[in-house]
Image (cartoon, rainbow, N blue to C red; front, side):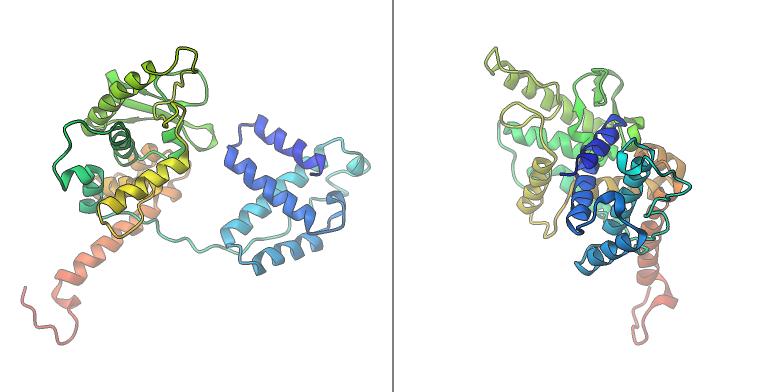
Length: 326
């Protein structure tokens, strides 16, 4: 790998960029370096435009292309300001960033997929609502129930959920506060927010924490004790991929006929809360969105719901030939 790429990524890591963002930027820059025989410092706007076109031809989405272009802009800005010998003779005025004038295709903004209220409640209640519950629930069932309650009841992102600790450690991890029924998380951009927990989430979390403590006490004395709220079979912090698999298994066990992923529960939280309250600013704060425009997408979901009610109930919406009386 070009050492300048590694140095750039280290600079971003020092600014607390998320791990998945750093991994994506690493792929974007190594792919760019591999696509040309030139040194990265010799690339021109024309070279980058060709690289962008090649990525589009390979089927990369407009969103991926926009992220790739953003990565390139940041990298060349950093390169211009660094003390690299390749750029020492130039300045930003005489040697502009070659990615600045490029524009990625404008992505269409798909509406987030949210579950209907009844389906969301059924999913959170889980398979136990469909069949008699066992006398002693499996510890994974208790853990999964607490996770699902927090995802839907608090609108947490997947990264925020798995980053939760049992107490405030002073690090960039979130934590739970049972006495005040509150969960505090660090969202995108290192923005901290606190979200109240409802009684079902609090009850499920308390039940899981009792089992969690018992499982940790059964581990060898010299085994490292994780502070993570949600643990895997080895007693370590649960991964995001494991959470996704558990939600998929839950949906399949319930015969839902669709995939339910963590962000769908966050979308459902936002959509259902907005339908009930109409408080867009409040939903924005609970979701941790920096811009109100990001939250406004849920108003489109609400409009879709109202349009369906209209189509089903209003006489002027009835299709020709439909003589149903209301």
